[in-house]
Image (cartoon, rainbow over all chains, first blue to last red; front, side, top):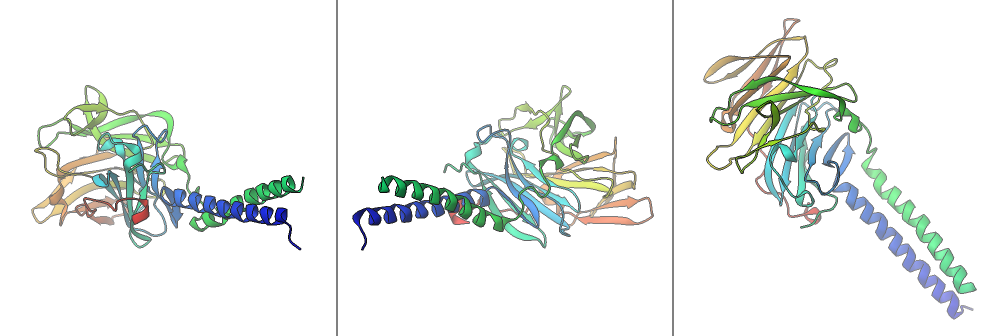
Length: 127
Length: 206
């Protein structure tokens, strides 16, 4: 026989589990939108902090790629980019192209033969 | 009492499930510290500006700043130089000094003959889109030339660094050739930027 108290506890447990998995999904989404490794590290890299306007679009060399591109976007508009070859890290710095709001920044990256072009967003995305 | 126990159990389960789900979901992206920031992080010993070149449109001179990373890589960065300072000219037309940051296009010159990068700057005011070809070379490189339909020209190497400023559209059909000490030549086909002007609207629209 199930008491009212047992039902309440079960409900709380289910709610807590739902919240927990939601938390995990949020963590996953936050990391996926900033920097991760698909054979080589790449993505959006913060500078000193998330509000100083200093951020990077970066693709490490490796995995046999011959060239790679990394671009800085702000408010979804391209502000500048870099292409590198062979063993050179692609490292576009926001401050090399202008002064931009970091939380509206994103990094578009491409690595020939390793991954197709895609965009990583600031972890504290605000638009 | 039973309600308190139930709440405590729920909290404990939530904490365990939260950590477990976060770990499981994030592990699919692999090791986030595969190479690590020390690859490009300056080692704190300063930087040099071995090569400069005039701006083809009459602006502030261009330069390459070179620092060494904590991992021992050589890291060139393209920018502008004015009154002995290194920085950039923004769309406001002003020169902004930039301190040394982890902004270099780093390469391990013990393994690779050179670092080669092209920075692409979109049009700004009356200035057209421009490209800056730059890098550093190891002793294995004996010379660099740029070739296009218009002909070939040697690129000056000073203090193991080089820089060329050109119009972005001039990259089309241009190749950079590095002559190596073993007699071979390494060639790179340059290309104008192919990135779209606008990006998808946000993390939910990738």
